Length: 102
Image 1: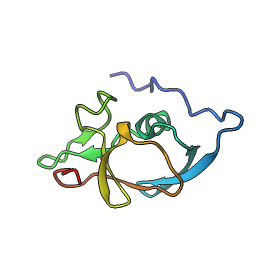
Image 2 (image 1 turned 135 degrees about the horizontal axis):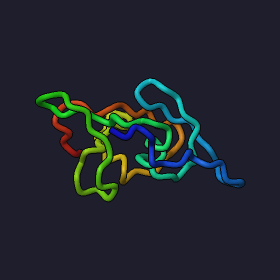
Image 3 (image 1 turned 120 degrees about the vertical axis):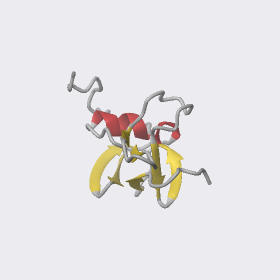
């Protein structure tokens, strides 16, 4: 099985503000407004949630909001990471439970 990540590291373009977010207890400095799922994947994060029955790991698949494999809890609200822009101070945890949307 191929283990190399096909994602590039998040670049630090000049003039783009970087903000601190927390994902599963780890702090990251990421570009404000960037796509959350893409940024986390570029950092090597692969497990965004676990299935409610077996606990199997899940991560972004479609990257367009159709599959719900990238569900995360952001500040206590279940959201799709692929449909979320990064903002200052986000506290993100892997989604738990059945992932009902607010």
